[in-house]
Image 1 (cartoon, rainbow, N blue to C red):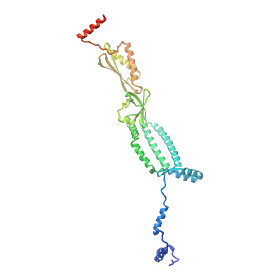
Image 2: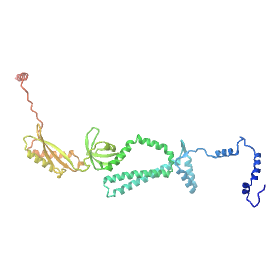
Image 3: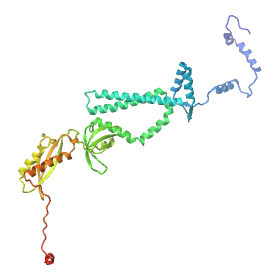
Image 4: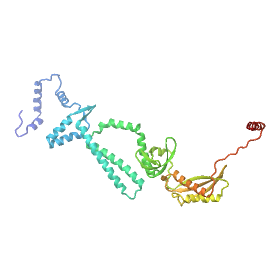
Length: 374
């Protein structure tokens, strides 16, 4: 049946039921498929044939965009980049080309340089803030440095277009490394930040440090790093103490709330000495030493009547413990020695008297010894 000329052909085919009935027998004459399947099965097979096979995953997607963008501008440069991209190796389901490697190296260098410049600029700006003390400035520098490097890492990932799913394995390995190998490192980092927050330890403080032999020395904190603090003693020995040790162990901070430190100098004199004169000379020795503070005033105490001497103790204050304690005590002792010699004050040395009880055996020994001499 022929459709009216006034109607479109497609409308006639969809509205006339007789057309469907006439078209139905025509399908009987169509050749059957070799496998006896329907036309739908053939369509499925065609679709399956067109599906691409599993290709290796590009780790750095930015290289594809780079090749396309450069190729659109310059065919020669685009061909060169394509040759670099063709040199590649597969690692599991990942494909890494030479262009990917060069692009990663370039972006890493760019990001590291930018982050380093930003940290320098941030430190310069923080140092200009007059409202912050030295501890607050150092803490601000640490936090800004961490934030800048974290941001630089994210920017680098975004520039490279790295598929984060490809880094899932490395992320798990990194987390495992933090849990085992880097646990102390992150513990020291957090400990350093906490020390700066509560201001218990800060650059310039004077603390007591001990070497491996157990000998204690006085040192000044030069800087607080991410892993450890640097302490320099009077003999210019630099000790690196992990931040975590300062959090869990007892620390003697000579300048925590004040730099005023009291030093003790014990001294003994003979029982024949004028004790009032001794007291006067001890005060004079303290006054004649430059590092001894006038306020608080020095103090002379009579401590005890010992076996061989009358024992005094001179107590005085200094305000620069980083200058050393042993040397100031030595200066005071030298002045005491000079004043005692000028005023005939005797510093006794230990003396012991031995008393032997009389006995027949002892008398016999003495008699034999006396006879032997004769």
